[in-house]
Amino acid sequence: MDFLSEHQPELLPGNRQLPPTQGVIEAPHGTTIVAVTFSDGVVLAGDRRATMGNVIAQRDIEKVFPADEYSAVGIAGTAGLAVEMVKLFQLELEHFEKVEGTQLSLEGKANRLSTMIRSNLGMAMQGLAVVPLFAGYDLDRGKGRIFSYDVTGGRSEETGFAATGSGSIFARGAMKKLFREDLTEEQATTLVVQALYDAADDDSATGGPDVARRIYPIVTVITEDGFRRLTEDEASQIARSVLERRLEQPDGPRAALL
Amino acid sequence: MSTPFYVSPQQAMADRAEYARKGIARGRSLVVLQYADGIVFVGENPSRALHKFSEIYDRIAFAAAGKYNEYENLRIGGVRYADLRGYTYDRDDVTARGLANVYAQTLGTIFSSAAEKPYEVELVVAEVGETPEGDQIYRLPHDGSIVDEHGSVAVGGNAEQISSYLDQRHQDGMTLAEALKLAVQALSRDTNGTQREIPAERLEVAVLDRTRPQKRKFRRITGRQLARLLEAGGASSAAEAEDESAEEE
Image (spheres, each protein chain N blue to C red):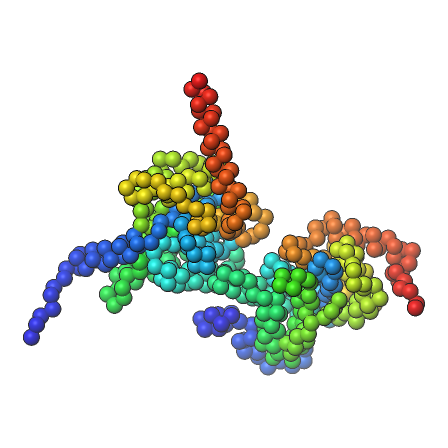
């Protein structure tokens, strides 16, 4: 990024001159991203919908990306800008790794992302915000960690679970009731799909599992072995089993009262 | 008033080439070999931190002999070139050919500019293809020329002798263990033809492995994995020797 700003500053998102606009620019927006830690690492997942006002702009958008071998970013907000930000973020991590011969620490990566979000503040104030969720496996501490951000680049580490995007309030509620400290990988992946289902249930901008078109949430797992995205088969299996239970119990699993 | 001595351009270039060649010859040599599943880089390097081989991009790696600060400079330049290309266009648009051209330009300009001293480096830029036919290996000597190589290449001090040794013995479709063994044999021959032992901890080994599922095909081979491969190479050659003796009987 430092090199780019010296040599080709026009490639950096923060260096663009914005024309004066009236009202809000219509552009596709990504919606809900959820993350949850489990005993061996962390799971990051996202729904597949992008909306533009009241229109569904895309049914099968991908909003969760590997940042490098041990971390991933899920994006909510203006899709075009967010995808570009992730691309630049991936490039920076890889570039650092190749030039220095060692990986950035997880904290370092999280801080870098924070700076990049902050450089987008001008756009955010015109309604083109990008709010990602960053999750990774911390090799030094031997556990999965989640970082959430606000539009100004403020960074906060979350314990257990986190969500971002329009459906995040509902997803967070669901996760709060379902989360436990000692989840297995299988339970954690089911949990995120449940949370996304609840988000889609109450938020019109979040897409639920689309059985007819075979579009299921993207679920990624990061452990000591690195980043892994669940295959379509695995993701559909989880989504279908959740769906099946919901046919009997539309509101999902019930937590104990006391 | 004293007149400066006239030095003919031919003489000036020859002097500069001589200077660069001597600098390169002081360093240890390294070899780059094609094998069935990719390209292997082998060199003698007592340091674990200062690498002779490194990753440039998904399928492209870099090897250098000569002066460390000079080739490190070129390496970082190459990584920047590749990353910028890949970001501006697409990851597929970064090629070893393009990179080799950039290096040739840089080295050539420095070599022929009277204000600078020539770089004392010799580079290899390699790209692994989907199939062995798609592999590309370019050797870039100090003066900025490009040599398109196949099969095996050696650079550094003892390069000529080592490459003739390799040319005679290298075959297409060798396994990694076989290629590694051949490389170590080639490197451990001294100028006067005597053999010396290079311990595993002084070897730097890296591969561009086309079977690697990740996008980035570069991988360093160190520690136990290296020891295992060296052993496997030794065992298979012992088995071959046995076969040969059996056939003789």
